[in-house]
Length: 286
Ligand code: HXC
Ligand code: NAP
Image 1 (tube, rainbow, N blue to C red):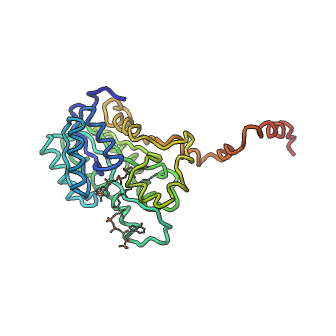
Image 2 (image 1 turned 135 degrees about the horizontal axis):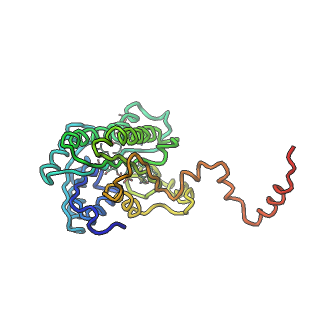
Image 3 (image 1 turned 60 degrees about the vertical axis):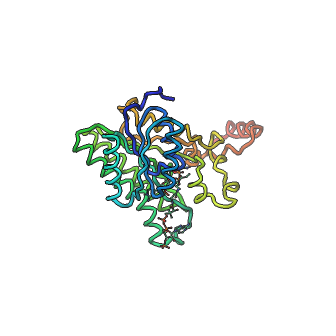
């Protein structure tokens, strides 16, 4: 979507960058000329992705093992990034933990685990990188991956909904507070984009067939990873330099489909509309 050198000279850190959507976004950033740092807990997965992406794109990828729940490990990612690339321009908070469960079945620790990864992890990374940029008086950008249920809430993924809602609040708050330092903070709210990590935990067994996401989407399909990567690349690039505090949904219209009171009328066959029109035209009121 963007021209070939759109991210040239930029160093971008993606948490959870070894798999799924983080990997897809990282691949495109590299193709656009960025240096990439990917982090997550599993060093072997990270290194494999780093090797694969360097080979595919010819770019430079640094893999740093880090559990985002641990502030010291996050500070180490920053230190390793500076050691290798000399600077860092963008942080993409993408790491997440999630699984479906009736809330009453969750232990307190299960609830905290998701909050700690998603909300606390995003806070830890934002704080460490933000402090650095403010100290260095360097313009930068933060991009947070939330979900559309950060606006609406959602049953059966309540810890994730609470955490993503918190990340959205942080996005809008820091856009204002850190704008004066030249730090832009934005978010993307993806709808369904099939990944192994998400589908195994959110649609296990035959749920993937029974609860086929594409049936909920007005465009009647799930998202393609490149579509998300296009939007993310734009938001970390200088082409979006005046966008700050925004959350952009990329979901084929899914969440609005669930929200509009009369959207269910989609189920009415076309041939029935003549009869309904007659009835509504002849309505006299009381
Ligand atoms: C109930 C569960 C559970 C489950 C774990 N727990 N899985 N409880 N149902 N399915 C409980 C455990 O019993 C434990 O509580 C606590 O949660 C912590 O579990 P651990 O396995 O020790 O945690 P950890 O190893 O840190 O793993 C974190 C995880 C795991 C979140 C549980 O799934 C993970 O690593 N996820 C990372 C990747 C991921 O989730 N990707 C999907 C993102 S998708 P007790 O009380 O027993 O100690 C996404 C998309 C949203 O966010 C929108 C899609 C459309
Ligand atoms: P994924 O492949 O499972 O990605 C999650 C990543 O987070 C993994 O690479 C995982 O790596 C990392 N991670 C988990 N816990 C971590 C921790 N404590 N510290 C550091 N890294 C950790 O799933 P995905 O679908 O690509 O999700 C990526 C993002 O998109 C998430 O924020 C998710 O909420 C969001 N999202 C996805 C969808 C979708 O349809 N797929 C929809 C809306 C939003 P390790 O296990 O190696 O740590």
